[in-house]
Amino acid sequence: MIRWGILSTAKIGRQQVIPAIQRADNGSVEAIASRGDKAKEVAEELGIPKAYTSYEALLEDPEIDAVYIPLPNGLHKEWVRKAAEHGKHVLCEKPAALDSKELEEMLRACEENNVLFMEAFMYQFHPQHNQVKQLIKDGEIGEVTLMRAKFSFLLKDDTNIRLDAKLGGGALYDVGCYGIHSICHILEAQPTSVATAAKFSDTGVDTTLTGVLTFGDGRLANFDCSFDTYPRCGYEVVGSKGSIEVLNAYRPDLNPNGQGIIKVTKDSGETSDYQIEGDQYRLQVEHFADSILQQKEPTYGKEQVRNHFAVLDACYQSARTGETVKL
Image (cartoon, rainbow, N blue to C red; front, top):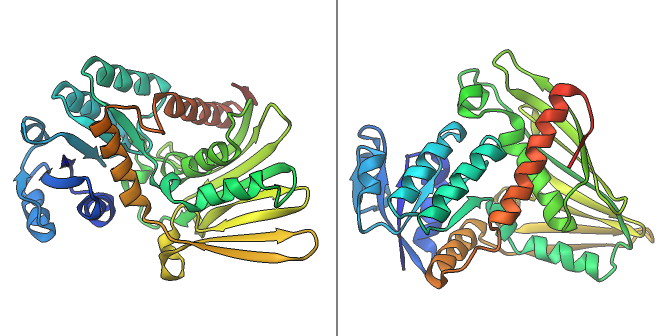
């Protein structure tokens, strides 16, 4: 069993990750920390044995093996480094860093202290995505030529930290990264060039961003993300004989019964639906805990997260310069 500590009382931890660890077969939540008394309240509510009024105090607890960090994006580097220096394995909420340079500092700290690191892209652990890959390999939609991804919602609160540039706000970091990640994950390839355009707020963060990814074999992908539209979430893989659409791909809990839903449409007009069970948060934390117990790199390891950040960096570079960026 891996003994977990949680750094902050963030909503995603309270509502998703902490309950997932408590459902897991190989982990337990032993402590939670906040800057103030909020941790005590959450600990009592969720049945967590220990509550700390500082992050440092939790990291000094010798009975904690790993920490989950859902702090604002701009604080990830500092607390990943400190967690590693205290010998704690780290599951860090996405985006792990603000750019590749920060990421390398974090990975180096983890390597130097012999602890494992994983960025928390929970969606990829849902089995529906392996089903999509299998449908593609079985030739159900012919030769894949295009993929499209979308993730957006309407952000009405002008004080939300997602609009704070210093804390790593922006639509790309918050939701667009899912589209990019899923494109590379499903196509099992890294793009060779990126071209994007964005709308920036007065605070300096992107509130809408769209882009095109070009792959070496000629396949194309496009994605969009926004804080300015009604909620949209999913991806579509298009081939020479049909298409595969995944509804609420990153949030299957929004589907009826919380199941993954895949819709296949063929050029003949034939359609078929797949409903896939999966507990993506639980599968994520169990995989990371297994990696710690078995002392092996997670399947979403250092090479994959480096590739992901190379694309994110290119997206922002292209949005600010108006030029296509080659990777």
